[in-house]
Image 1 (cartoon, rainbow, N blue to C red):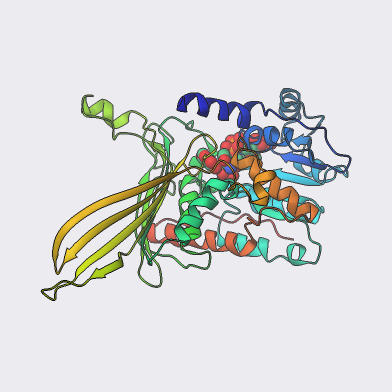
Image 2 (image 1 turned 90 degrees about the vertical axis):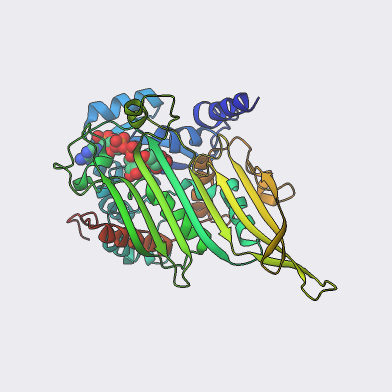
Length: 435
Ligand SMILES: NC(=O)C1=CN([C@@H]2O[C@H](COP(=O)(O)OP(=O)(O)OC[C@H]3O[C@@H](n4cnc5c(N)ncnc54)[C@H](OP(=O)(O)O)[C@@H]3O)[C@@H](O)[C@H]2O)C=CC1
Ligand SMILES: O=C1OC[C@@H](O)[C@H](O)[C@H]1O
């Protein structure tokens, strides 16, 4: 039943939306910069169920590639250069899904051309570029186009429900963690993520979600200081690590917050091993492994009750909470939010009794009665939720109130740069484009 439910969710959200409304006359016409692998999931399919979005054009470096992509996805216009798409007056907004090294340049060029920008994460190659982009006069000017870093998972009700659960929990946070792994062989050896010159690396890719998640949990103003960072260089089955010595294929980092809370992230672009021991060790080590993307907040114990006793030593009832979300990156397929209270009854130092109470939640939509629940659909993907809010911002509508502003995108890149430095690696290189 659960499997059937998930298959149906994937079908509705990623393959064929059950509702495909007629487009309105003032629909936003989006152009795709790059005939990318991700656009069919992140924009092309989500646009089908949005009455205010038309995917009107695609540009690729090679016109044949642009035309083939346009034919395959039913996009009416193909451009032979990205600049030609920007010069197309019929385009209102662009989706930039290029290697990370190209994000800064093409965002600025797009903004200069007056286009709204949905920009893939990470926003830039490094913090210097992010500051220049988000503080650029073209972006800070009144009525400047909208620029959004596409951290799609944040727009889904599941992530927001998890955050509310964390922020309403009693006590203060003790530790926070987040992990996101891709199985080994999910990416080809020539993937853009394995190239330093294209601003690749695990921290720039899956682990950037981990950094973003822990920053969301702790509060977006948080400054994280990396204390220990380990990375695994490229494995021999790909470009050798000697060829790409600055690339982190997997990363584990611990950080401290200004008030000494422990923060841990783990990301992997080629996760293997960790399989059960009935396999020969040599197989288990190299077989791809699938693990849920997960984020978790653990709280300090709180005193629930102190019960006076005749002998003068009170019974203390303590409760320690943890809140975990399983599959926060793709919650529309399946997710679960666990709120677990570990109770302990103490007399002095002695544990008299301990027990656990866990509640499980799902949030494929906003809670019933919430105005947003009437707009959102249970089958919407994170990308569809994101598109909804991108369009709401362009149109000046109220929207869900979830948004990622420039300060957040800058702080995100600052954390990534500091983490690379702590690992003994270079932050990713800046391009030479300037306006
Ligand atoms: N939000 C999400 O869930 C996801 C986000 N992403 C992000 O989207 C971006 C693109 O990722 P993805 O779709 O996997 O990437 P692709 O490998 O599909 O590359 C995207 C495009 O980059 C263009 N490109 C421009 N210059 C180069 C170059 N020097 N080498 C290779 N390609 C180049 C190509 O455009 P052309 O068509 O012109 O040849 C290509 O179509 C990344 O920033 C990534 O982090 C990726 C996957 C998921
Ligand atoms: O959502 C995602 O999943 C897979 C990653 O490699 C990708 O870049 C990321 O955005």
